[in-house]
Length: 333
Image 1 (tube, rainbow, N blue to C red):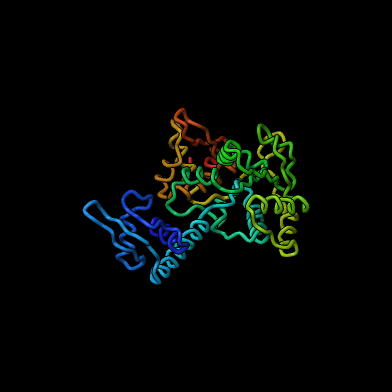
Image 2 (cartoon, rainbow, N blue to C red):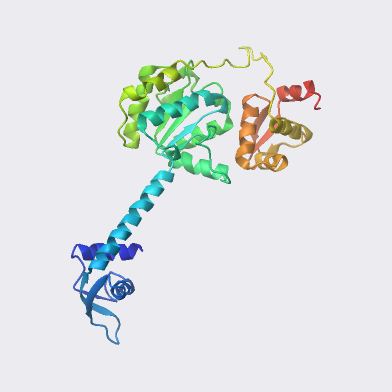
């Protein structure tokens, strides 16, 4: 329908050539189709040498059809824009309390629909069911108009967060490091150390985040009074301390795990002779890739599992001492 729309738009402007034949830039078959449908009228100058039309003009039904095609095109464009991820928030599951408040704040400040925000641990912003997690995340990390990386002691332990931050930095697109309340900018290392990081614990810097994002996304932000309460919620958020002392010793044991998470730990313990990939874990616990990833991320955050890269470039998972102690204490091994 693209050529139909183009020809009718030219006709509506009176810009069609006086003669259209097989040598013309316009596809003669489409012109013939529009004439036979009554959307164009023209003098038929066809001969044994081929189709030819003189003085083509748009008809009343052609204008109505043009309006229909234009409306359909606009609707398709709006649907594509609605489905496109404009803001990607990379984070650890352990920072989900902060991220949930941040999403509410940015939606209020920037009037972004939920469908344009990707935030994998927050309901309403997760990947769609059945999506190829790695493929879609890789695509959205690269293509999102803006990318916020939540920087905390927990997120920097996450291999997924590290990959997402590295991939975004590599494509050179807008990247906004946002420090969780109480996190010092000196925690940043490598290429990220050269980027100016804003703090979620600072009211003025949250305002700056809105301004910077609005400029990047080319949208007009809401008046500050409309999201002042959201800023208060973030600034006053009490961040739970790490489960470890400064010397690295375990301060407290993790809370009781979900049944699937315990199942994953036992599975990894049983396969201690070789580390498992996420697809192996998902298949064994009979869950889809996304749900399995959610459980594994929590176990990584609790330091019950460790992740590493195999020689084939795949992420594999193994049991930590803490994970083995968890199973032993509950007599699972």
